[in-house]
Amino acid sequence: MEPIAVAICLAALGLASFEMLTKRPTLSTLLGGSVYAVHALDKAPLSSLGAWLRRREIDTEGAPKRDGASILEGPSAHVPYKCIHHAFGRHAIVQPKGMAVIDHDGQSISYEELHQASLSMAVMLRAYGVRRGTCVCLVIQRSIPHIAAILSIVRLGASYIPLDGALIPDNSLEDIVADARPVLILASVQYMDRVAPLGCASQSLEDVFARARAQSEHATSCGDLEGARPDDTAYVIYTSGTTGKPKGVAVSHQSVLNLVALRPGNLGIASGTKVAQLLNVAFDMCAWEIFACILNGGVLYLRGPRRTHWIQVLKTVDVVICTPSILDPHDPADYPNIKVVATAGEPCSQALADRWSQRAAFYNCCGPTEVTIVNTMHLHRVGAPLSIGGPTPNNRVYVLDEDLHPVPKGEVGMMWAGGLGVSKGYLNRPELNSCKFKHDPFFGGIMFNTGDLGRVTDDGSLDHLGRLDEQVKVKGFRVELDGVSAAMRSTPGVISACALLIDAELWGFFSPKHIDASEVKCTVARCLPCYAVPETLVAMDALPLTGNGKVDKRRLRQLAGAA
Image (cartoon, rainbow, N blue to C red):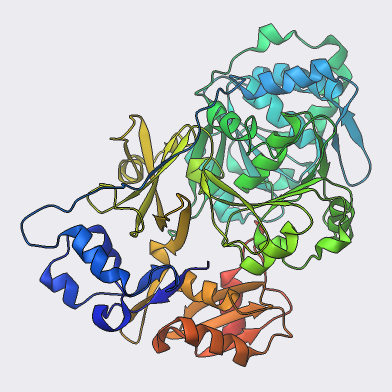
């Protein structure tokens, strides 16, 4: 069931604000509030309001009961490897001649060749000062040398920072280098001029790789290059978030392996499984594509820059990891070889999930960068309500109130994440870390505030109800934009939709273009209060995407301004 926004006039519409749902209600909170995303009324009928109030035992003195607390635990499982290079090295031994990576030009490298090249690169990088605890910026385009560089860097106990040289603005590049203080920049040859003025040692990635291949037969033994430990940072993903200023999220070896070395995060990838590498190299889901493939013996297919390269890869591979917006324009009937699809990064529509799950195992997943790509996954069945499922192995999700107490099942709260997937935090952001990462009072360790609203359903799965920072004021009422987008997506035939507040007016963008805007408006009006229905609806062949494959909201705002 898709999330929708409902009004907070309790008697009339049965709604409650986030504050009411997560704190002990008082008379003042019962009489007023705001509009937030909750689920469709058939799952939370008005008749349940009285029961909810009774469960909370509303008064001005006693604390509410917390029976049926919203704490979800993923299964406990043993992670078979300590470090990333241990998993890769195993496959270099058991299938040395097996193909590891194939690029869009047909160039390929076997597991044995990639292993030897990465060892030689590690020797060279160590000479440039790369050691345990340091970091290396990769200003690159996807390539076989890019994969070898990753393996060589993490082996040394250092971390890599992937940056798309074709897309990253100069000011962002400067900010990231200043913040991360890398000991070395490895840049694709066409970007060497961009990194030269940054005041950091730099080398051409292609040159280092070529020299490593030439010396690979004399590569140092593995034992001489063992530097990494399970808790060492493997990669740092920079994301602007809501501030616009890049901040780096540090993710450890053990967190990566907890996702990609266990089911369902390994997506069933095994020796010879063909896996697409479609996504922007700076996107954390790209790490899922790469590591889920080469740490499980699969063959990684690197797409090229042209649309024909996209089609070529999609027609070849068995497994695709991407955002719903990337999947949106494609008909699964055109890609009969695809057996497994995993989407994350933004909300998925019921229609898209149903369409693809008819032909492939379709996983709807959720989780921010700070919890290692995704920490919940759900194998969707055609026609079943779309869900983000439950926590992956060794991970936990807590739905908490503002006092960090679990809310009763079925009530809305803030989703916090615990377990092995929780990242090491933000680089050089102690104040932000202390705000977003807290001691886990339930199981020990650290938990992370995802910023997402959610609730646990009766069957124990999670409903994702949008982000707290996606709330806006419309005509004096607070509206959840994700809820409006979800209501638009519930229109039959609509695949992708996005709601934005532009110059105090609510706009709705949707695809495909042939869907009648009046149908979309009627659907939204049946789900939402009148003030939450977009005043302007724009039908598009496809919504524009960012370099990470998510809906490009900045571009939509520009299109609205030009209208």
